[in-house]
Amino acid sequence: MLEPLARPLHLVLVSPQIPPNTGNVARLCAVTGSRLILVEPLGFSIADRDLKRAGLDYWDKVFLKLYPTYAAYLADFPDARRWLFSARASTSLYAARFEPGDHLVFGSEVTGLPAELMEGGSGQAVTIPMLPERRSLNLSTSVGIATYEALRQVQLGGPARQTPPAS
Figure (cartoon, one colour):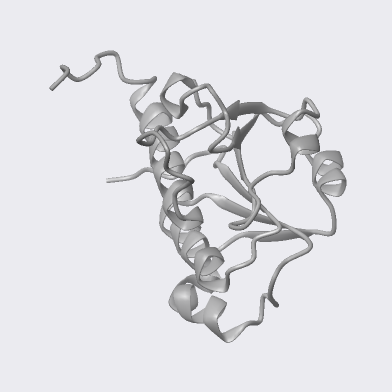
């Protein structure tokens, strides 16, 4: 069973464009106790029917904060530990050492995180390993993978200590 964290994870979506992805992430937040942060511009209204449908019965359990810009978000959380997820990063998610209260930051489905944000020093860039010559994972799938790896580390006291044997 998952235990609530005294310092929950923050899942940050920068300019998400597809309502069902954001709805799925909201549902993930509800079932993990993570906080949802949305950074505008959004490609939809948060009252959008598709967004609500993806997580309708969970919206009352989601802590949601909306920011007009990434700079406004940074100003509200100046000392947060941030992990910037990108298919173009070279460091694996599995090399990250997550801690309670960490912020997991994801870009839009269309463009990912902007280069200026990736290079701006606001966090450590990490990637979810994939087979070569694949563009990317779905946003809500990526957020789910990253969230549960962070929770596994935080709840079990650290990253995996063994690597699986090569096949």
